[in-house]
Length: 233
Image (cartoon, rainbow, N blue to C red; front, side, top):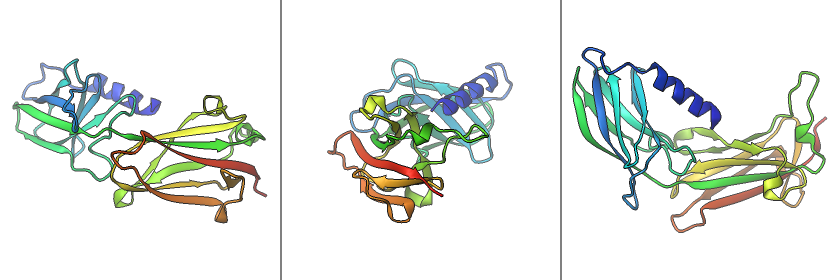
Protein backbone atom coordinates (compact mmCIF):
# COMPACT_ATOMS: atom_id res chain seq x y z
CA UNK A 1 0.00 0.00 0.00
CA UNK A 2 3.05 2.30 0.18
CA UNK A 3 2.65 3.64 -3.37
CA UNK A 4 -1.04 4.38 -2.80
CA UNK A 5 -0.42 6.49 0.30
CA UNK A 6 2.54 8.27 -1.27
CA UNK A 7 0.19 9.30 -4.08
CA UNK A 8 -2.44 10.44 -1.60
CA UNK A 9 0.06 12.60 0.29
CA UNK A 10 1.09 14.16 -3.03
CA UNK A 11 -2.56 14.98 -3.74
CA UNK A 12 -2.92 16.62 -0.32
CA UNK A 13 0.14 18.75 -0.99
CA UNK A 14 -1.16 19.75 -4.42
CA UNK A 15 -4.74 20.53 -3.31
CA UNK A 16 -5.83 24.16 -3.80
CA UNK A 17 -5.80 26.33 -0.70
CA UNK A 18 -8.79 27.75 1.15
CA UNK A 19 -8.29 31.11 -0.46
CA UNK A 20 -8.90 29.97 -4.02
CA UNK A 21 -11.69 32.08 -5.42
CA UNK A 22 -14.88 30.26 -6.34
CA UNK A 23 -13.69 26.92 -5.00
CA UNK A 24 -16.32 24.52 -3.70
CA UNK A 25 -16.14 22.05 -0.83
CA UNK A 26 -17.77 18.79 0.26
CA UNK A 27 -18.06 17.79 3.91
CA UNK A 28 -19.63 14.92 5.79
CA UNK A 29 -18.81 11.80 7.77
CA UNK A 30 -17.49 8.29 7.05
CA UNK A 31 -18.99 5.37 8.99
CA UNK A 32 -19.08 1.57 9.04
CA UNK A 33 -22.21 0.49 7.18
CA UNK A 34 -23.03 -2.34 9.62
CA UNK A 35 -22.36 -0.75 13.01
CA UNK A 36 -22.70 2.95 12.22
CA UNK A 37 -19.37 3.53 13.98
CA UNK A 38 -17.53 6.58 12.67
CA UNK A 39 -14.17 5.89 11.04
CA UNK A 40 -11.29 8.21 12.01
CA UNK A 41 -8.01 8.57 10.10
CA UNK A 42 -9.19 7.24 6.75
CA UNK A 43 -8.58 9.00 3.45
CA UNK A 44 -11.56 10.44 1.57
CA UNK A 45 -11.18 11.35 -2.09
CA UNK A 46 -13.58 13.35 -4.22
CA UNK A 47 -13.09 12.17 -7.80
CA UNK A 48 -14.73 13.82 -10.81
CA UNK A 49 -15.29 12.05 -14.12
CA UNK A 50 -13.37 14.82 -15.86
CA UNK A 51 -10.26 14.22 -13.77
CA UNK A 52 -10.65 16.82 -11.02
CA UNK A 53 -10.14 15.59 -7.48
CA UNK A 54 -9.40 16.46 -3.88
CA UNK A 55 -8.43 14.44 -0.84
CA UNK A 56 -8.42 14.72 2.93
CA UNK A 57 -8.25 12.58 6.05
CA UNK A 58 -11.12 12.09 8.49
CA UNK A 59 -10.94 13.47 12.01
CA UNK A 60 -11.54 11.65 15.28
CA UNK A 61 -15.29 11.53 14.72
CA UNK A 62 -15.07 10.38 11.11
CA UNK A 63 -15.75 13.91 9.86
CA UNK A 64 -14.16 15.31 6.72
CA UNK A 65 -14.15 18.37 4.49
CA UNK A 66 -12.60 18.43 1.02
CA UNK A 67 -11.89 21.95 -0.14
CA UNK A 68 -10.66 23.64 -3.28
CA UNK A 69 -12.96 21.79 -5.69
CA UNK A 70 -14.05 22.99 -9.11
CA UNK A 71 -17.73 22.81 -10.01
CA UNK A 72 -18.79 19.30 -11.02
CA UNK A 73 -20.06 15.89 -9.97
CA UNK A 74 -17.82 13.95 -7.59
CA UNK A 75 -17.72 10.35 -6.38
CA UNK A 76 -16.58 9.96 -2.77
CA UNK A 77 -13.98 7.19 -2.39
CA UNK A 78 -12.45 5.92 0.84
CA UNK A 79 -9.09 4.27 1.55
CA UNK A 80 -8.48 2.78 5.00
CA UNK A 81 -4.79 2.69 5.87
CA UNK A 82 -4.94 -0.84 7.32
CA UNK A 83 -7.33 -2.07 4.59
CA UNK A 84 -9.97 -2.57 7.26
CA UNK A 85 -12.76 -1.42 4.95
CA UNK A 86 -13.55 -1.67 1.25
CA UNK A 87 -13.30 1.36 -1.01
CA UNK A 88 -16.85 2.12 -2.25
CA UNK A 89 -15.35 3.22 -5.59
CA UNK A 90 -13.91 -0.26 -6.21
CA UNK A 91 -15.30 -3.78 -6.66
CA UNK A 92 -18.30 -2.63 -8.69
CA UNK A 93 -19.98 -0.76 -5.84
CA UNK A 94 -21.94 2.48 -6.26
CA UNK A 95 -20.18 5.32 -4.38
CA UNK A 96 -21.89 8.34 -2.88
CA UNK A 97 -21.95 11.14 -5.46
CA UNK A 98 -22.20 14.87 -4.79
CA UNK A 99 -22.64 17.66 -7.33
CA UNK A 100 -21.32 21.12 -6.45
CA UNK A 101 -21.56 24.44 -8.22
CA UNK A 102 -18.87 27.11 -8.17
CA UNK A 103 -18.18 28.24 -4.60
CA UNK A 104 -20.80 25.90 -3.07
CA UNK A 105 -20.21 24.35 0.37
CA UNK A 106 -22.00 20.99 0.20
CA UNK A 107 -22.43 19.55 3.69
CA UNK A 108 -24.01 16.44 5.20
CA UNK A 109 -22.58 13.69 2.98
CA UNK A 110 -22.71 10.30 4.72
CA UNK A 111 -20.30 7.74 3.28
CA UNK A 112 -20.95 4.22 4.58
CA UNK A 113 -18.25 1.65 3.91
CA UNK A 114 -18.26 -2.11 4.40
CA UNK A 115 -15.75 -3.97 6.55
CA UNK A 116 -13.33 -5.97 4.42
CA UNK A 117 -12.35 -9.61 4.61
CA UNK A 118 -8.67 -10.39 4.15
CA UNK A 119 -7.33 -12.91 1.64
CA UNK A 120 -3.92 -14.29 2.55
CA UNK A 121 -1.89 -16.28 0.02
CA UNK A 122 1.06 -18.29 1.33
CA UNK A 123 3.66 -19.31 -1.24
CA UNK A 124 6.04 -21.95 0.14
CA UNK A 125 9.52 -21.78 -1.35
CA UNK A 126 11.96 -23.96 0.55
CA UNK A 127 14.50 -23.59 -2.27
CA UNK A 128 14.24 -19.80 -1.91
CA UNK A 129 13.92 -19.36 -5.66
CA UNK A 130 11.80 -16.25 -5.15
CA UNK A 131 14.82 -14.51 -3.65
CA UNK A 132 17.18 -15.30 -6.52
CA UNK A 133 17.83 -12.41 -8.92
CA UNK A 134 18.81 -12.53 -12.56
CA UNK A 135 21.67 -10.57 -14.14
CA UNK A 136 19.45 -7.47 -14.32
CA UNK A 137 18.65 -7.68 -10.60
CA UNK A 138 15.05 -8.85 -11.10
CA UNK A 139 13.39 -11.55 -9.01
CA UNK A 140 11.29 -14.26 -10.71
CA UNK A 141 7.83 -13.16 -11.85
CA UNK A 142 4.91 -14.37 -9.73
CA UNK A 143 1.39 -13.06 -10.29
CA UNK A 144 -1.08 -13.14 -7.38
CA UNK A 145 -4.40 -11.32 -7.50
CA UNK A 146 -8.18 -11.45 -7.60
CA UNK A 147 -10.60 -10.99 -10.47
CA UNK A 148 -13.62 -9.07 -9.25
CA UNK A 149 -16.95 -7.89 -10.62
CA UNK A 150 -17.04 -6.20 -14.02
CA UNK A 151 -13.86 -8.01 -15.09
CA UNK A 152 -11.50 -5.88 -13.00
CA UNK A 153 -8.25 -7.33 -11.65
CA UNK A 154 -6.91 -6.47 -8.20
CA UNK A 155 -3.26 -7.46 -7.53
CA UNK A 156 -2.40 -8.67 -4.03
CA UNK A 157 0.28 -6.84 -2.05
CA UNK A 158 3.34 -8.77 -1.00
CA UNK A 159 3.74 -8.82 2.77
CA UNK A 160 7.29 -10.17 2.87
CA UNK A 161 9.64 -12.61 1.17
CA UNK A 162 10.87 -14.54 4.19
CA UNK A 163 7.46 -15.93 5.12
CA UNK A 164 8.66 -16.02 8.74
CA UNK A 165 5.48 -14.41 10.05
CA UNK A 166 3.49 -17.27 8.56
CA UNK A 167 5.84 -19.93 9.87
CA UNK A 168 7.26 -20.77 6.45
CA UNK A 169 10.88 -21.92 6.07
CA UNK A 170 11.02 -19.85 2.88
CA UNK A 171 8.58 -18.14 0.58
CA UNK A 172 6.31 -15.13 0.49
CA UNK A 173 2.99 -13.93 1.85
CA UNK A 174 0.48 -11.91 -0.18
CA UNK A 175 -2.51 -9.96 1.16
CA UNK A 176 -5.61 -8.38 -0.32
CA UNK A 177 -8.65 -6.82 1.35
CA UNK A 178 -11.82 -7.96 -0.44
CA UNK A 179 -15.54 -7.31 -0.05
CA UNK A 180 -17.87 -9.82 1.54
CA UNK A 181 -20.90 -11.34 -0.21
CA UNK A 182 -19.25 -10.94 -3.63
CA UNK A 183 -18.13 -13.85 -5.83
CA UNK A 184 -14.43 -13.46 -6.64
CA UNK A 185 -11.70 -15.48 -8.35
CA UNK A 186 -8.17 -15.78 -7.02
CA UNK A 187 -5.55 -16.36 -9.73
CA UNK A 188 -1.95 -17.40 -9.09
CA UNK A 189 0.48 -17.97 -11.98
CA UNK A 190 4.07 -17.55 -13.09
CA UNK A 191 5.94 -17.57 -16.39
CA UNK A 192 9.26 -18.35 -14.71
CA UNK A 193 8.52 -20.61 -11.73
CA UNK A 194 6.94 -24.05 -11.65
CA UNK A 195 4.05 -23.91 -9.18
CA UNK A 196 2.22 -26.50 -7.12
CA UNK A 197 -0.69 -26.60 -4.70
CA UNK A 198 -0.37 -26.71 -0.91
CA UNK A 199 0.57 -30.41 -1.05
CA UNK A 200 3.19 -29.94 -3.76
CA UNK A 201 1.14 -31.28 -6.69
CA UNK A 202 1.96 -29.41 -9.90
CA UNK A 203 -0.70 -26.95 -11.06
CA UNK A 204 -2.38 -27.71 -14.38
CA UNK A 205 -1.18 -25.10 -16.86
CA UNK A 206 1.06 -23.72 -14.10
CA UNK A 207 -1.82 -21.57 -12.87
CA UNK A 208 -4.61 -21.77 -10.30
CA UNK A 209 -8.01 -20.11 -10.40
CA UNK A 210 -10.07 -20.48 -7.23
CA UNK A 211 -13.61 -19.07 -7.07
CA UNK A 212 -14.63 -18.02 -3.56
CA UNK A 213 -17.10 -15.87 -1.69
CA UNK A 214 -16.64 -14.49 1.81
CA UNK A 215 -19.98 -14.53 3.61
CA UNK A 216 -20.68 -12.04 6.39
CA UNK A 217 -20.35 -14.73 9.04
CA UNK A 218 -17.10 -16.21 7.72
CA UNK A 219 -13.72 -15.80 9.40
CA UNK A 220 -11.98 -12.49 8.78
CA UNK A 221 -9.22 -14.23 6.82
CA UNK A 222 -9.34 -16.67 3.95
CA UNK A 223 -6.06 -18.51 3.36
CA UNK A 224 -4.76 -20.11 0.16
CA UNK A 225 -1.48 -22.02 -0.04
CA UNK A 226 0.82 -22.80 -2.95
CA UNK A 227 4.32 -24.19 -3.46
CA UNK A 228 7.26 -23.22 -5.66
CA UNK A 229 8.49 -26.50 -7.18
CA UNK A 230 11.36 -25.15 -9.27
CA UNK A 231 12.23 -22.99 -12.25
CA UNK A 232 10.66 -23.35 -15.65
CA UNK A 233 13.04 -24.16 -18.51
